[in-house]
Length: 208
Length: 162
View 1 (cartoon, each protein chain N blue to C red):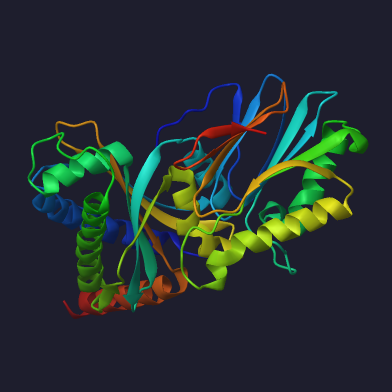
View 2: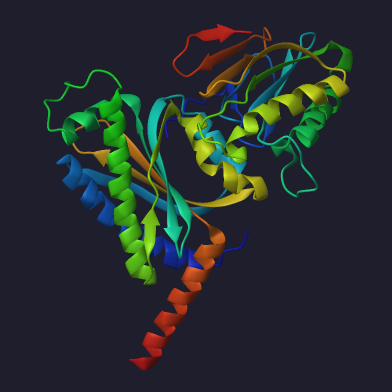
């Protein structure tokens, strides 16, 4: 698996812009400020990243989607189970503490937030790369953090020991809730899109 | 993420294998992957492999990702690094869930992982002493190298000891 440092830098910038847009859409959806605490894009060893995930024994709810178009990839929004209940109250504009246990409303909330984040990121990538990107319907998983993450990266790990991963951590203001967002771009289509982006930028620079 | 690691807990990631001696514990979380635990009750040494596919099929990369290359490697570590005698080693296996309810071969890999793991341990002459396999939810397992007991927790179920 190869990605140049220049491409990694471009991707990092696009991801940061995307996450900024995503955080605004997220805040608007839940009518509560979602602050970005961390955004990182790196090529990671599958054993190292999953070891980190496997130290987290929390129960999580996650919404997994695929991005399809000129750039393929997978997206995952993940929140601790207790945090998902608070998110549900925010989303449905109920008094905090109304949602008591995980049910179809919680699942729907996580699914919807996954959709909104994926659309915001898809739009940012599409305008960055000048191409169409569409998210697939989300699949919701309720399980341990490590088990969910294993499913996210499974296909990429079959032929690779390293994966390109962007991780964003949101903190909901005035709460203790951390939400995680992962983007796993397909390297082949990413390279094509970044090459096109680089060429277009070079042409624009030459013309100006 | 929240790190629960401390000096006495060794965590194993996907495609990786680790050995540890009492008083350490070894743990991992599994989805469709299978966790293979080998234990030497004489020396109180344990090893854990987190495999994700049944066969290597000449693929390059981490041997610990595959049952057919990872299990012999774990056995080799136990014998040559931990100085365990093969005849005292016992195996316990966990995981192999079908996490997504779709008719896709790649998501039904848990069952293939289980079958290949059982086959290879049999070929190597290692007795499977306990197992908790399959289902549709993730597993968390922790091996106590002092006792050889594996605590197995399936999402939404009680923790059980094997």
